[in-house]
Structures are given as structure tokens and as C-alpha cells.
Length: 338
Image 1 (spheres, rainbow, N blue to C red):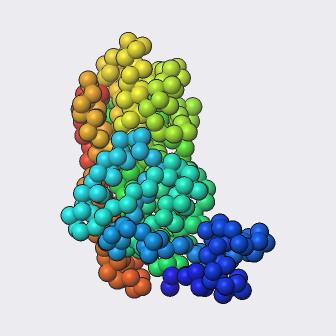
Image 2 (image 1 turned 90 degrees about the horizontal axis):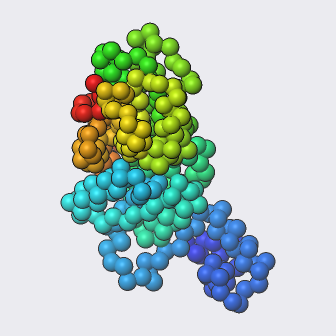
Image 3 (image 1 turned 120 degrees about the horizontal axis):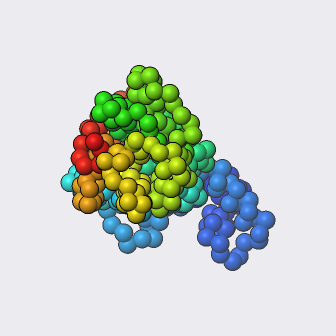
């Protein structure tokens, strides 16, 4: 049941008017009372309802989407797909960009709850040990929640994601079958689940082929971005690999740019493989060999599950707790591997 300002006032032993002034930082209430009201509001997971004060219409048809960043084209593509699917199903999409900050994600959660969204889809932050206590506000308000492309550890909400381990396994296995045995693996930190799953697939393919895993040839970047990958390429080249395996296409393109500047031919001198298969992966001068994440299917299933949760709100048995729905990826062979 949604916590109201009356509940806050009662718990803080003040009038509704005093609680309102404290929560809206208005004059007429002393600082001790203000802090008491704010503390009670936090404990009760109170979120102000702006609908009565707003001219925004059809709040009841809104769903919220939170993504970690917009710089990576992967996320902008995901937003485009979910927006279209939501509109086709009669929903209006509210978008939040957390910038990989817990406090920012929390603010968007509060905003969505205040706008009385029917459900929320979250693409988690690229951080280990992220503070996600604010998700208790969503649960307390009985708002359906689905994770897309990744999740937060022990959360019981359903998740839809690509089978990252299978995709990376198949790519590495393909490169081994082409006669390559000396690899460098480029990733973000392995505490991030999607990175760890890709690494497990890579490691499994090496083990099956009897190729020792060389930890000195594993490069873990703070962020899986173009600039970070471009900057580390000279260090990678000191290993003299036959192939470089990246966990996403944007990093692959950063590495390819630096290889070109060093007059290193791809794939004659070094094979290069990515992951995701974003649109630009086909448009670069030498189209990327990559693993295709079927985002249409992933986003479609996430929306389907969210709608089901909205329909059966309060009946968790209808949707298995903690279930992960894996969507099979596809190997796409182009011009950057032999």
C-alpha cells in the first residue's frame, strides 16, 4: 500500500500541514521537527505524489526505464526499441539516465513513483557493490520491476538478457578453429555480471582447446568505452597477440582505430572480434566480426514480462521469482577476423 503524507504525519506525531511544510522545505517549521519528519519519511519509503499538482496527463499509462548512460550506442538503441514497443502497447515511456550513480538512479525511482508509473524496467549500473536500497521503495509500493540485459545480484525480480557466456564461447571457439591460439581479452571489470559471463565463455573455449589462460593478456578497463580501449591498445600490442577479443563493439572500434594508426593490418596481422552487433558495426571501413545481441527479442520479452506482472500484480506466483530469461546470441562473421 502506498504511504501517504498522512502516514508520515502520524508516525512523526505532527499535523499534516507541518509534515507538508517540512517535506517541501517551507518556512514555519523548526529544524528539529523538519529533520524528524524527513527521517520518518525515509523510514517509510514515502514518495510525494505530484499527480494532483501536475498537468501531466495519463500518468496511469506510464512505465519507467532507467539506463546507466547514453554515450554508448548500445543503450540508445535499447531506448529506441523499448520506446517503440511501449507505444505500440499503449504506454508512455519515462526515461532516466543514472550515469552509473546510485543517487541518480534513486532520484529517478522516486520520480517514477511520484508519477504513478505502472511498472519499471531497469538496465543496471556498471558498478560493483552498487547501493540499491532504493529499490525497496519500488517493492513497498508494489510496482512491478523487471531487469533488462543485466541485474543486481540477489534481486528476486525477473531478468531478460543475452546468453553472454554462450556467445563469447562460440566466438572464441570459432577463432580457435581458424588456427588462432594467442589471444588478448579486453573487458570492463569482471565484477560486472555481463563481463564475467563473457569471460567465462572465453575461458571455457580456451580450456576445451587446451590453451592455457594467460592472465597477463587480460585487460580490464574501468569503463567499456571507445576511448579507454583506444588508450590501452599500445599495451595490448606488447603481448603480440594473434587475436583480440573484446566484450563490446565500441571498444573493438577504438582498438581498430589505434591498430590502423600503427599500420597493423586487421585481420592479416591481428584478428579482432567484438560483441553486440550495433548498427555502426556494419558501417565502419572494415565491418566487424561480432556476436549479435538480439535486442529486439530481449526488449520485447522484458516488456512482455512487465505487462504480465502489471496484470497479476500481487500474485508473484504467476511469475517465478528471480527467474533469468536467456536469449540466444548469433555469431556474425565479417571482415576483422581471418
